[in-house]
Amino acid sequence: MSLALTHTIWTVLLMIIFVGIVVWAWSGRRRERFEEAARLPLEDDVPHPHSLSRKAGEGGEPSALRANSFTRGDRHDG
Image (cartoon, rainbow, N blue to C red; front, top):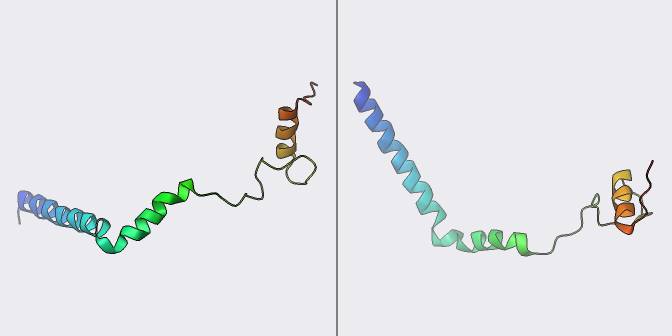
């Protein structure tokens, strides 16, 4: 088998795989699932326990408390 034939076979095989993936992705059975996944970034999230949005004094990481103190204007130089 020559090198050119091997390259041709691989090219055709990869093209068939590519077309198969495109057909799978655009099939009607997956439409609802993909639309749901597309809406995920727009939905409200449950706050992460280590989020910086917590108020100072509620426990958590010192960096979160430090970030909140800077936003309130209680910055300490030193």
